Image (cartoon, rainbow, N blue to C red; front, top):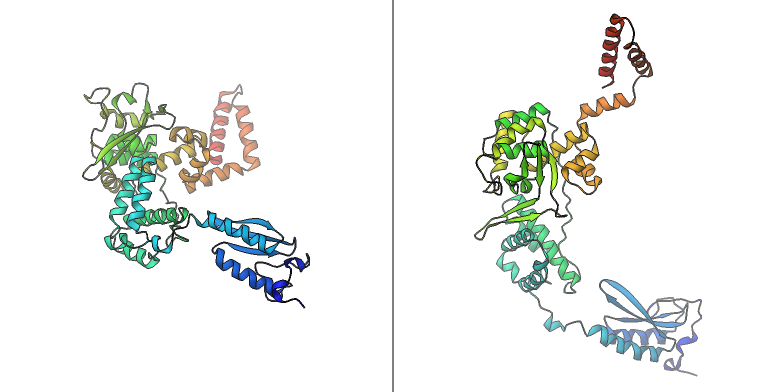
Length: 420
């Protein structure tokens, strides 16, 4: 009789499939299951398994979150020798337990040294601000010791909702980067909140003019440009006198301007993505509101030498005086886009806003007025008899009798109003 150690590993039928070491009720002999269990302890975290469907042993390991399998042959001992060599290669990049300690501060220094040179200056400034809001006690913790409770405690100490939101997103990025680098198996914090699409009121032209007139003279041109031309705040602050052509009623957007605050606060000017200026027409109605921007400045001077960080506060006060819902400066871009879509169509709004994809214009800036949609619905489903009456009236506008022509024009006008 043969003892357990003499059992050949290939005795298992191909139709009797099992996984690593076999499972309870498996057709794999107990001796092979025991031997595989011993081998897997030696090559951990890699593992070896026997596939009865093909009669081979396979070596498994994980790389970048994916499980990779390698076939090592049909002989168990030969497969084990090959597995030992492969395991040494795979495990050579895994530090010893005594050397795995890594504080959050150390990881931040490593991560920022690699990432910051590739990021925009404004993004770096924001990340640095978020890092200052992380408590010193938490920075000195080992990243494996950081729990969700620690992060929630850190966020609860931050007073404003906006700052909490930014720090939450920053910690999610920092810890997920540690996972990708192989220092963490799973991040204790993931920022999954999606920004809700705000409801922007649709202002009438009269309300738009009233908001501009209620604003102080120092910010009135900027608010008028935002409302009637749809420029972002950074684009307005980057305008030079030569970019405002009131004679031909055109603005030339050459880029944006970012203001970074703090002890080393600076302004940063950045050109458009294509490097070419984007012409934006100025409506006649807005020309008189924008005209004061030129003054006695030189062509190369900025329209707003100082970055107007107080403009949102002044805009809300103007909205209060004009008796319209309070708006932020970026909301003015939404108001402008909505009016362009309702009157000129989607293509016009896309061109004025400077979007490369029309989907961006539709998804973000289409806040259509209910009354306007109701009129358009009526036009889409117009009464056939009313349509026929208008066609007959249009035909009679060329009648010889002047009285008939006048009556036909009035009937046609009434039909148009009913169709709107």
